[in-house]
Length: 265
Image (cartoon, rainbow, N blue to C red; front, side):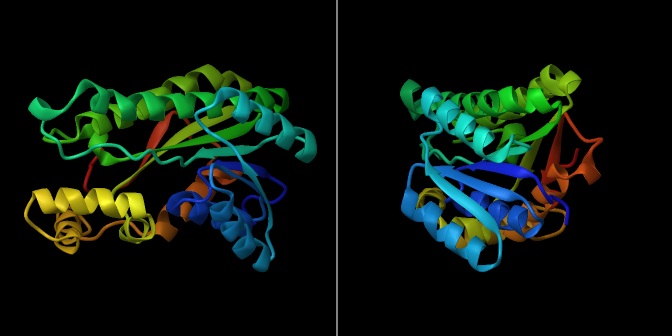
């Protein structure tokens, strides 16, 4: 198994991507600690993992609150003997599709401040424990909008670009301590869109503004990739498991392109 005897913390573990990665990590032998604001969602994921023979624990944590995150990280490290892997899969519902001329400063700033804040807080909390072992993997999430021109995604674009820049710089900061940092950049995932009510609402609004259905928007997005399809949830989760493993030990300071060729690096 790729992650045998590894301790993995997943922030946003009740969401579509977070839960998929949690299941993949557990399947590969990791002891998984799910953190999030809604215990019912976390417990549902934990039940699935336990039923499949995985080892999992849940905790209510506000990933935007530094004290809450640090207290949880300290508790996990104390109980498990350290933290080997951390993924921030926190989702922040925010305005998209509004033209620049109509976009308020508050709506522009909100996703930038939120996503950068949560990634900073969670990375710092787990890094303190990884440094002690001189090893660890920190994973972040981004989307291709980080490299896309508008219109309508100004705040989201800057937020994603910021996450990628943060990940690269953090890799340089923590590399001498044996800690790797990789950002996973995925295109729209149809399964995740349908599973998450916030994503479904957001994309439906964007589709409505464009005068098409959500299904038509997803089909158009798929047609714009080299593979003529969108990434699958399992592909993102399995890639995360591989990157978090020792088999990807030479990877750090990079963005893993999971856009099916929508973005060509």
